[in-house]
Length: 242
Image (cartoon, rainbow, N blue to C red):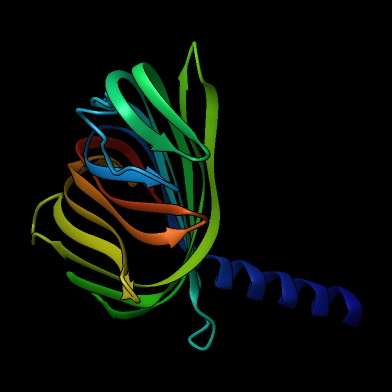
């Protein structure tokens, strides 16, 4: 009998604590416009005019897990894919160990995964989160033509950044506004992801969010890649806040 009472008490306590565990999941699309320069062991090329990259649609996803334990941080995970391709005309363009002239075709495909540990500083109609982030960048930028062949620039790196999010819930409405991002700048390198958005919540935490996202890569000879590239675009996401 005592064992059954203890089991019931533990179960009740666990269910009560579970009521305080929440989070958020969002999945959406962004239309990204690249700009800037990129090089791999050689000539700086303009990503629009030299590489021929244009605006493309990409998938983005975010997930948050929040709990009632004040000592332990909350968790945030994000995923973004950057994918662009194009053609260009070059003369004596060095990329990797090859020098290209004539028509080139290019492909750029990069996955960015963020893992964040953060704390809720404010949690009412004004929300503020602060934390630290690890940004994993894994991608390939390829240049190819029929005479010289293909050259791949591969980059795989984890970079720590600082994270912050501020959210304002408009009183007596289902509307909220949010600014979120992570960033770091050191030794000639600058990286950041910034989101500015508005959200409307329909029912049971289900809603839609729309805004602008900007990703910046200023890399100074990381894996032989030197770049100063921005990816900026409008996005829309379906959101479940549970």
